[in-house]
Length: 201
Image (cartoon, rainbow, N blue to C red; front, side, top):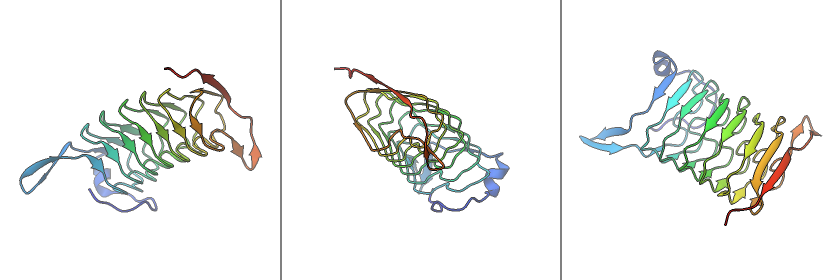
């Protein structure tokens, strides 16, 4: 499934014929042998402007760097139940309004959902450990519940979410600089109210 690296938006005639819907199969065949698809390669579907919806099979454990970057019409994705890692820029500049992650996800890497400006709600997975730098920068999140499992939130992970009003998070974790600061046109907006919970032993 090799594809172009992240770049300018383009239309795919094949995606157009499928009504903008991409259903990736669980298996591929090579030399007559059946092999499960375990990852989406770097830049595989980046910049496809007429891609609306994606369904990923449960065999996939990792989504590569910029895999669906700049798919500016992509508003629906079915994430696989075995997924563990969403890599750098995987879904940046997409059109999601809500996202629910499978509990298997432990890492959301740098800028994974950067500038998903319609994104107002996320349900972070129970076993998530790491939220990367700029992971949800310039989205439109309204409130956040950070699971007790999270050990690190990278710098500016939720920067420029101008309507973020409430964050609930455990006390003992590493929080990077400006993780929740809000800036609009260079002016510091009102900061989100942060509620700290006692970590579970």
